[in-house]
Image 1 (tube, rainbow, N blue to C red):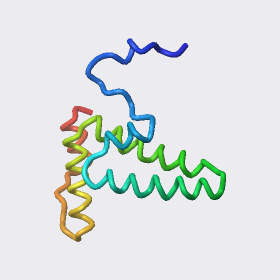
Image 2 (cartoon, rainbow, N blue to C red):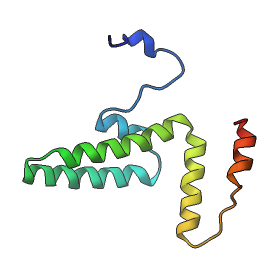
Image 3 (spheres, helix red, strand yellow):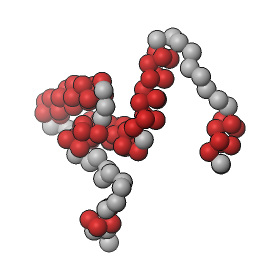
Image 4 (cartoon, one colour):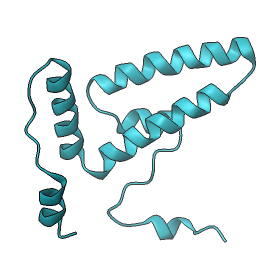
Length: 105
């Protein structure tokens, strides 16, 4: 049985499931990247009459939206770290063993 709407009440945001919801959850340059890819993928789907690439694109962006909704600051930190790496700058890291210990795992 599917849970009712009351099961989703509380502090947790509802998962982004539509293109509009996914886009609303994105931040910064991700919004423009999403818009460009969405328009391109939709145009290709219109030509090929095949929505599989649209669905795959939305699933991928949905994961980005979930990451953003889960912890916006951590997501922004990840984007900044990726930008530093792409620019050839070093990024401070820690061994997995220390990360697990810090998280109590």
